[in-house]
Length: 87
Image (cartoon, rainbow, N blue to C red; front, side, top):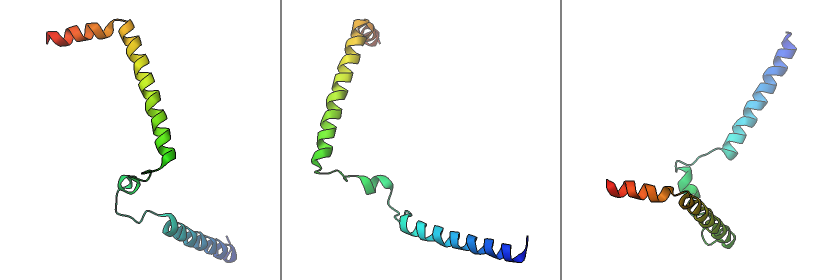
């Protein structure tokens, strides 16, 4: 490899290193605080988020009720309770 090509590559690497440094400076995590503390409460008083969570809870209750009904239909919950009472 000739000297001119080597100098060009060194210059490109140097530019890339500088750009990487700037990127890390702009987007890097400078906080010592854990991520969960930084994000906790970020949806406080957010009406859209509250509506989404109501739907999520409604769907979960429906899923739990369906699973419980299926479990009871198979008679497994009654057998489980008998075993639990015998202990």
